[in-house]
Image (cartoon, rainbow, N blue to C red; front, side, top):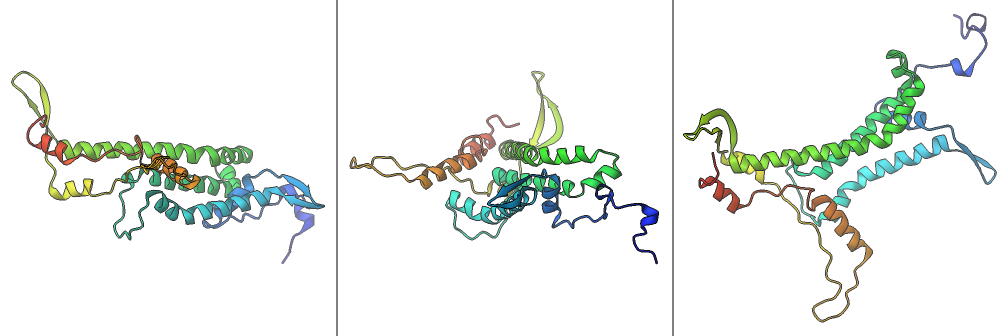
Length: 259
């Protein structure tokens, strides 16, 4: 058995060596970060610091820490310390869902980077083009995914609101005596109404007045201001669609404006 026959394959060239090894799915993210990172090095206190490995290592740890801490951060923002046993519908938590899709996008892009050589050879692409796609997509992809996902969730919330108020579309078209065409809507069942309206909608946290009822100046901490800003970003105007009120539902179902 021949091992590494130099007379057959020629002298050793580092740029021609490839083991064909690819990372497993659970390490593809870290491998992709290392492959996409430029080969930067600096000298620090007489030692060579390889930034091409150090920076991906830090980013990998920060991402895992953010995923682990997120439930506690959201609980702090909402002030909800209850024990929950029923999952929220993704559309009813648009910011949380958008963050989740952004993370998945970041992971998949880094996973592509972890196999950039196979992507290049199998699809006849330039490995440099694949690497630059990963470098740019790692930052731009999650942002676009966050924005698009949040808009989709808000659109689905609007559709649910219309279903609650006007019922579901039946596909039956009627012509009124004065010539107008309308589509007949069928009221939803109580079970369907419950599914669409049972979720909680948090109100944005407000900062207490800087002066109390006695005219004494109240000290507002930085954490209170931060919590209020994050709360408005999560549940403020434009970040969730209000559920129909009982009055709105009764007005519609009593015949006013209902087809």
